[in-house]
Image (cartoon, rainbow, N blue to C red):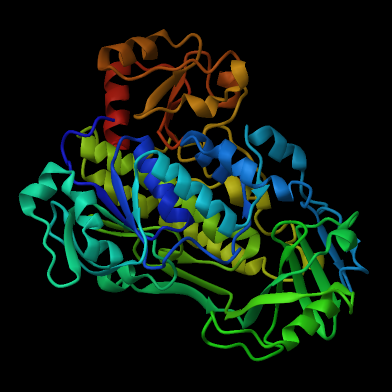
Length: 533
């Protein structure tokens, strides 16, 4: 989408996984962004590690999937779960009996991968800077004001003082017209939109006065990040997570690089300093050795961090031209890195909408659909994540939502979609069959491509082979058309003369199983509804 209406860049507060992905997604849609981060660099903690196939589909769309898979190579063999008194005594756990992995293999052209957050964020940062995206660290948002035509933000820190931030925004003619000032060590900038991706303690959310709801804190935990050469001990015992059941060291070991870097998640067995940079209690090394089951292995404790598994979701994900994404919008328990993966889906959802409004193809109402779509999905995933937090031997029973349905089966029932009367998406299995509000069904195409790759910069019509009426209407209205192949109608719930519209985020926005008496009018109405016009 060619940006002609609003030359000011989008300001993204937070250069973590979600902030950097938002910047890359905006760039993919032709929208300039500037990213600020209060910390001096990317994460120094491994944090999230499991990135599901829906996240990898986003990375595929914005052109960074190969770089992410390369960063994940070290943990490619560390996929399974184990449990036992100690790591040495552990046994592999079988997959849940109610999970059909054939669903997963057929659902996507991408695969989930394990890569520690402190390895992934530098990859995204490099990709962002290679594309010309300005990222400023040690820079803090202190104030914001939305006047309905843009957002004025006050920023302090290194980039504000040395002029680098002003230079980033000064490239836009509208910024030059409104002025960039430097009162003291602060820089005042003008942005078209502001995305708060600044974490669980979000300054953006606080400045907006948005409250949160949910189950709250669910206990107390400690994560011990340590270094130890466990290559010999883990050979033949490779794992993603190993539950340890020793009474003196109950918890879970997690692989960070598969040999030298590890995490041990447990309860508050020993005191933990409030300052995360303070040296950890040396007794944690003994606890870790007990969990491993090797009393003589050298262990270097890098940090011990106290935290609380928590479920809190912002009551609003947007306020005018200011939007919340990632942990700023929803804090979740660590189950399957649900918070990080959901945040990356937030970025995918909001980027094309901002692009459409800026280009003039989308109406202002399109921005409201971000909250309407993402809030119920994020709340549901956060709630399910909390319910699934527990021992690996007691995985979620089939009465709870299917784990793959939780990853890819979400359905937007309000927002930039039109209900076709086909009913709600099942939650007890992964079924992607073309319902509006769900992710487009994947079918392989020639050259290693997927039907997911047919999504474009604006809604694209995917007609069945005999849908001459829809094709003619699309040509008349200058709506892009893509050919999804002969197997498409059955996979998408279409007759031979039906069609659907796929949004830029690969979500089905509208479906007509058959032809229409007035295809031009029907298609015009669908496009206008999806784009908030």
